[in-house]
Length: 280
Image (cartoon, rainbow, N blue to C red; front, side, top):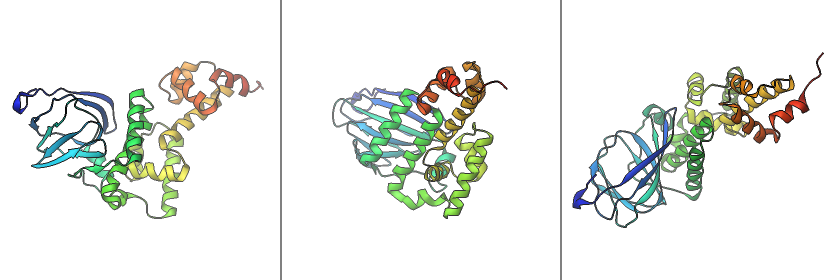
């Protein structure tokens, strides 16, 4: 497309993840130096700058953005992107459905209008998340990490607002963790969104409270339950790995083998021989 001054804007986005109200896109901009076009976005998003430098004009105010800054987008913002240097920029965009964002941000999905500092820890976690999304890691794990990253970024603006839905007492937090474990034991396929809805809390606060209480994420707990179900079947002599993978909730046989190897250090075949019980 053409902007003022006849500059050509070259903008591409590679959608890496789009599930349960979160979409992660690797965005590349190769706009030459100059003024960009004005447009109004249709979605809420949190954007992490990875490389380059540009000016975002939103509702008449200019903000200089570089890899030490995070910026937020709200639907209807009148925004324009100007580039003082050649070679463009690279960013990671996390788009959120309004209801999910509201549960994370004090029940109001309207994001901050001013840029947020990208601390070293937040920047590194953002890059880990991007790498996980590029690899196609477990979707539940990517989703949970994305919520945690968004919460960490927004907490720099208003930590109390991000924490507003968290259970207040140790007893309440323990009860929430136990309720989540009970539900997952009955059905490991519960998504974070559905589980939070069933327990009456926000997905982020459920994820955070569960991690604090168990030392691991809900996605990892779900995967460990599936591994244990698979081990029980292997110990009973089950030798159809494709069918076993489908029965206990893995995407396919290779996924089953990869996760079991990561959790136990052994292959399913080796474990079937090692754990097998004699027929009575």
